[in-house]
Image (cartoon, rainbow, N blue to C red; front, side):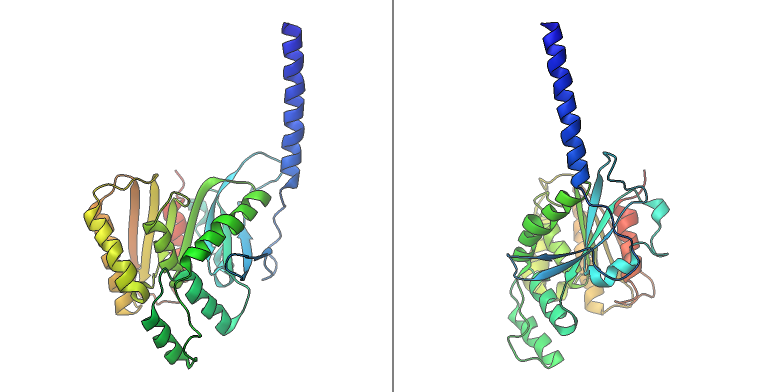
Length: 295
């Protein structure tokens, strides 16, 4: 009986190794970062939009070993991924992490139109009218309140695609700037443990101030405990951004900090002399060094 058991065990181990090698062979090799061409284009059936995927990998990423990595999903990746491997990132200070930049395939005005619908948590007709007037659009061109669909797209289409094709583990983070910061805050406040690391940078809280920011602050004020997995949050803005953006970011951060949830590790920062645009590479580095600091 011992011989039979050992033989079965040997067969099992051989089959396991075969299937493991097949699984590893199915993973994709990273592309060289020699151009601005995206790594992938994903067509979403949920939002009916196409998304560009730009990726950056740890130095020793290799499809032939069994090491897996956490992933940080970075919104507006088309304009951000150039900083992924640049002098702005203190790579020696961060643990190995795969960066996935997500942006809309369309360019120019249409890209901004898509950002408003995907990144705003709730319908805001006042913002729709104001933005349309500001840019000379016909009313109805700018639409808001599609964050729930975009989040579903992330969970059911984009993240599963990345998990299938690359060596990821279950630790996921998300980071965004401006409208992307608003969407990231929405994911955090409504946390269901799908993401456990959040980079909320220059968040456009003024767009949904009455229907998102105030209820979020009320939640921090009223809820003694928050039943979520251990979570890290980094919140930032540039000193020279609009006064409303800076004050709303401070308000959000201070109420969250005051609550001092046991399972939420949060840090916030205002970058001196930085504007809404100039702060982008700096806050990305702040996000990485805070959320993925080497131990």
